[in-house]
Amino acid sequence: MKKFFSSILVILVIICFLPFVLSLLTHDQTNKLAMVVDSINPILSKKELYAKVATSKPFIIEKPQRVSQEKNYLYCVTAYDKNGKSRKLLCKSFGQPAKIQVGDYLLIKAKGQTVKFWKIISRNKIPKNIIQEMN
Image (cartoon, rainbow, N blue to C red; front, side, top):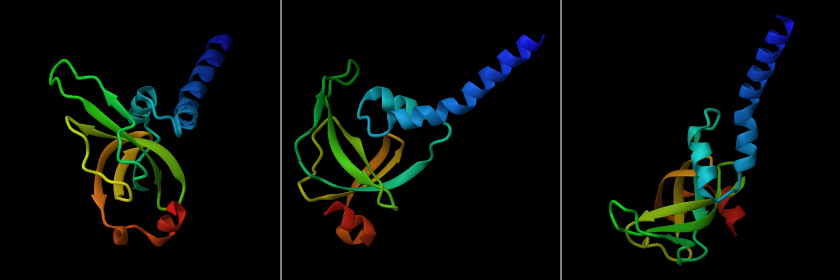
């Protein structure tokens, strides 16, 4: 009986710490596994991040999906949160290359490595401390 309870306790400890460990392992990983893990991780919340486009060429062009036959274009950017902490993210454009140019600023809403939404914004909508980090 004592062994049973100790086993249950070990399992509960693993379950409690697993989300924290996974969030550390997926930080700055630009692969699909990191995106999937972060999208289901309960300890991560959605954050607003800001990025400056360094290159207008896609980082990866995914092969057409079976359903739509359209390619997806992924752009790798270094994004900053409101505290100036940086992370690498992949922003996806479905079906056609994004109309982004070098020097454009992006507002990104992400949960960990999973980008939920992004759009081009003007420089004056970005906090000054983040602009200093970008330059």
